[in-house]
Image 1 (cartoon, rainbow, N blue to C red):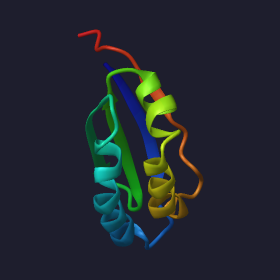
Image 2: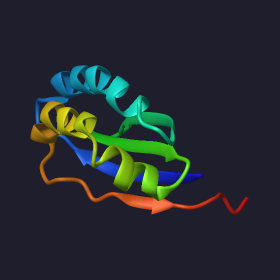
Image 3: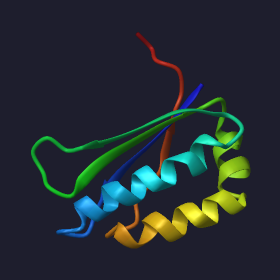
Length: 97
């Protein structure tokens, strides 16, 4: 399993609309082959910051599967306008503990 991680900086004042859009977008990613689970958590001490964590079977499921799909185009349309700046995505391997 691979964990995709990104910090999502949402434009000030747009958190409520972002959360609604994320709920709408969730089925798009969940329908992807290799998808395992998704979490989007708001920061406890900073407004408009979210942690995105998606578990995939492997990196290719995200990069070549989801990102090359029509579903990703809909995901972008729903969510990318909220970010300032665009998030950096990192991948992490299996837990060491």
